[in-house]
Amino acid sequence: MATLKLASFNVENLFSRAKILNLQSKQLTEQLLDKVADLNTLLAKDPYSTADKTAIKKLLGELKDYITLREDRGKLLTGRGNKARVTAKGASAWDGGIEFKRDTFSDTTRGNTAQVIKDVNADVCCVVEAEDRISLNRFNSALLDSKKFKQVMCIDGNDDRGIDVGIMSNHAITGLRSHIYDGTARSRTFSRDCLHAELDLGGGKTLHVLCNHLKSKMGGDSPASKAKRTKQAERIVEILGEFDLKTDLVAVMGDMNDTPDSTPLAPLMAVTNLHDVLELAFGNDMAQRWTYNYRGKKDQIDFILVSKPLKDAWQASGVERKGMIGVGLIPASDHGAVWATFDL
Image (cartoon, rainbow, N blue to C red; front, side):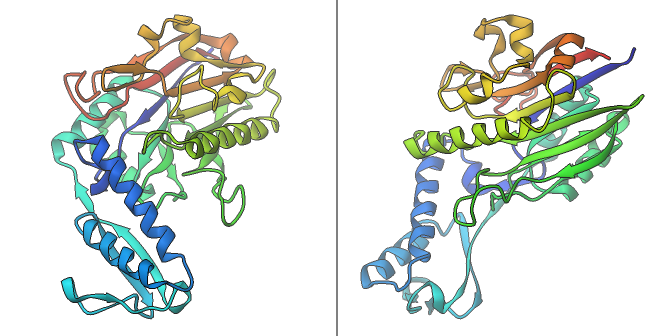
C-alpha cells in the first residue's frame, strides 16, 4: 500500500498580479472590472458612434492606473493624454486591446505561499491562479526547497489577467488535455480552464485530475455569472462521463467560487460516485469545512471531489488555513488549502 496526498490551493498568483485584482477593497475591484467589461464591449463595436468614442476615452482615463492600450494595427487614438481622441471608425479599423498593469509580490509574500505548500506536503497539488508555467516552475525550483515537486505544468487559459490553473506533481504527468476551447468562439465555457492531467501512480494505476477555477462572483454575482458557473459545472459533469467513477481514480479539484449547496454547483454535487473529501471528514459541519472568509462570512468554495475508489481509500482530509489573509499567522492568500490523504 502507498499513501497519496492531494491538495488544492488558490495561491492568488506567485510573482505578480494584475493591479486591478490586488486592491484592498474588493468592492473597488468589482467596480473597476465592471468598467473594463464596459470598455471591452465598446471597443468591439463597429462602427463607433460619437457617444461610443466619448465613452471609450472616458473609461480609458478612469482605468489608466490599471490598464494600458495595445495597438497592433491601425490606431484607436490620436494624440496623447488629455488631448487624445478616438479617431478609429470602429473595431475593424484597428487591432489590439487592453493589457493589465501588474504589481509584483515581495519575497515575504512568496515565502508565505511556499510555506503553506511545504506544510501541506502533498504529492499532487492543483494550483489556482498561477501566472504561467514558467512562473510556476520558478516558484517550485526556487522556493519549495526539499519539498519541490518533480513535475509542474500549466497551460495559459482564457483569462487575460494571468490567472491560470496548473498542477504540481511528484508522479509523472503522462497526459495533459486543455478545455479552453470548449463552448463557442464567442462564448468559451471555462473562464480559465478545466485542465485534465493524467498521472502515473505506478503499479499500473493512473490518476485523472481535473483542475478548475470557475467563474467568480465579482460584481455582485449577477444572473449571468450564476449561469456561467452552472454551464461550467454541467460541462465538468460531461467530462466526468468519460470515466467510470466506480473503478477509475478521478479527482476534481480547484476553486469553484460557490458553495456545496448552491444552485450552480448542483449538477456537479449530484454526480453519483463523486465525493467531497471535506464532507467525508466533517459531514455537513461548515464550521469545519470553510475555505474562504469574505466580510466575516465563512464558506467552502474550494474542493477536492473524488471517485469511489479514492473515497474507499480515503484516510483523512482538512483545510490548511495558516496562510489565509486575516486568519493565519503567515498571510499568503484569501483561500485555505484543501488536502486529503488516501491509502492506495
